[in-house]
Image (cartoon, rainbow, N blue to C red; front, side, top):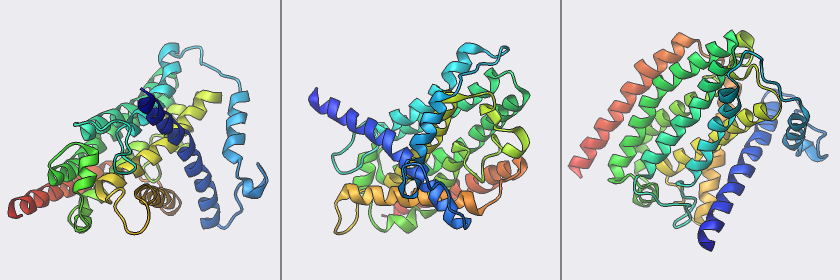
Length: 313
């Protein structure tokens, strides 16, 4: 019982701390890439406490629910968007033997729960009784349907290569030559995951210049903060999954396994921020075309390549 409590306490700490680190990193990385200072005052040294200050600010704001909104759905939508990412971390190994729960169907569990997280955005859009929010929710639904397929196909490729759906077993089976072998699947998985998180350049459901904040337009205070936290938690989860499925997780020379895992996770989080700064928002037709004409065929090519190599070896 003590072992279970300690494991889940560690997962909760990671869930609460790493998204804040990624959020602060985004502030500073974007500032440097755009030749500006970024937050500099909260906490003193280079504004290290900016996200904490933002949390205090959100906690002080009034919690407003529109009169025409579906109150129950409106209230639970932020939780639906956030909690699945906490559940996903339970099945992701940080080091050999260092995992919350080693599930035989861990990959299936992770992909299914991640899909539930996107539903929070759809629920928020529908329940807000706001045409901009509804449009954002519809875009979220279309994006989920389009990018879930290449995400699952890419993950299926690495599961086929390892011969198991257990995520720790996939990492244990990983070899260095999987990097070129599964490279196409890794890129497809990462891009499809970004699209499901609605991160730029895949942020059409939010698109501030068109539909204000999309599904989150009517949200204030802590409910809005939960949506923001879910975005950064999603970045952490996506980086962890890409690391353990395609980059070998804890495998690496000299350093401890958990150190290698975190190094790879933060490197991928940096790429997520880099993409936000570097690329403009895609149009809805471009976004859908990328999924169905680009990523789905590439994921099928990766599956075929994996099958050929497995048969030959």
